[in-house]
Image (cartoon, rainbow, N blue to C red):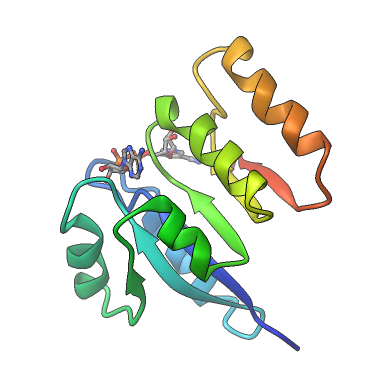
Length: 127
Ligand SMILES: NC(=O)c1ccc[n+]([C@@H]2O[C@H](COP(=O)([O-])OP(=O)(O)OC[C@H]3O[C@@H](n4cnc5c(N)ncnc54)[C@H](O)[C@@H]3O)[C@@H](O)[C@H]2O)c1
């Protein structure tokens, strides 16, 4: 079976929920493979990958990450979710976005409209 290639955007420095995502993906090694990371702060994703001994591509832009993956975990702060989710859906990717989707219902509407028009898997991480 072809493994789903996954990327994480927003590797973190406070709670670092991306830690939970990477642990989940590593626990599903037969189904998926974490292949790429992107964080807006230069060097942060590379440092995070080094600390975790991950052999993944460190991308300079979100679009470069999307070039590498089938699915993306959005682990950025809430205000940054919707533009990233929309871009990922536009590029035909499956999306797991951390809660909440955004900071207001109005901002969510475009993302929800687009999500409803694709056959990709979309999920908000409410765990
Ligand atoms: N499900 C849960 O139980 C749970 C728990 C904690 C946090 N969260 C959610 O997870 C998300 C992240 O929280 P955190 O505490 O891990 O945050 P964090 O601040 O530790 O990490 C966010 C990372 O995103 C990066 N970033 C910011 N804007 C970006 C952008 N446009 N592109 C790429 N990278 C960007 C930052 O540089 C930072 O490294 C939030 O939405 C939060 O609500 C969920």
